Amino acid sequence: KELKSLEKKYEKDCILTFQKKLESEEMEKKLDFLKKMREEKLSIEEMGIKILRENLDSLKFKEEFDPENLFKLLSDNQTERAFDILTKKQQTLKQFGVQND
Image (cartoon, rainbow, N blue to C red):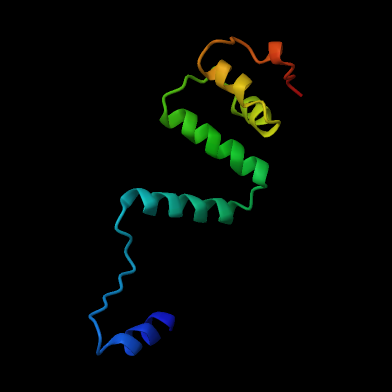
């Protein structure tokens, strides 16, 4: 309705065209992903871990990185430690005090 009212308001001043289709395929993928997350009704933490896992997969990180432990480091503001693990300056999460619960 809002778009119709804008169109009506400015019809004599300019030509307006509205499209439902997104221009960017990447943006469309992200919106689909967010819709799917909402439908799954995951907690914020579960969403974060899932997004981190998908990002690690898309960046071709090996499965040796445990997304849950990495997420814990990041959520505890231990970004330097997480970065060290990802860049292999640090080999294990145990040395950073992360325990598998």
